[in-house]
Length: 215
Image (cartoon, rainbow, N blue to C red):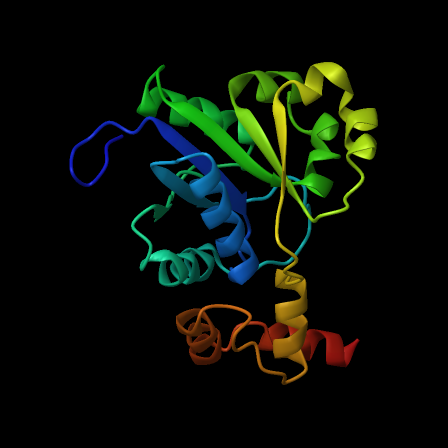
């Protein structure tokens, strides 16, 4: 994989998730990591079938992909990847990292950005030890987060593959945005305006609200 100018990418990070919808918290984390680690690219990787959310209703893959594109297209370091969307079956991180390694070559440093709380669950992932060997993990967390809790779960061997990084306080979540839409509240300034407009035009999350109102 190369830059638009044809240069070989040397440092890349993956930010995966359902992005249902993508918001400023995702973008701020990606920008901070890109600056701190001098990255060539941050690959936003929407999940096709998130294995950690079995039975969880999510918006159609194409809607989530297009919202991510709308949110990131003004930043030349941000790219939305279809790797997991176009692959059949659950979106296992191990498969993703190995596919990227094959594309990027052995000399590219690949980081994987995770919330610190998500790292606590890494031991339950598909082939967790192999996942840790495939890349370097950046555990983003809020100032004051108890990193001892992370170490106690992952252990010294796991922590050797994980680099904690404190983020500025920005308390936004996709769950909160969906709930705001369901209850008729604005999501302006919580997500890029093109994403908020897309949600309005497509009527996303309204169906969820109808299901809840009938239950």
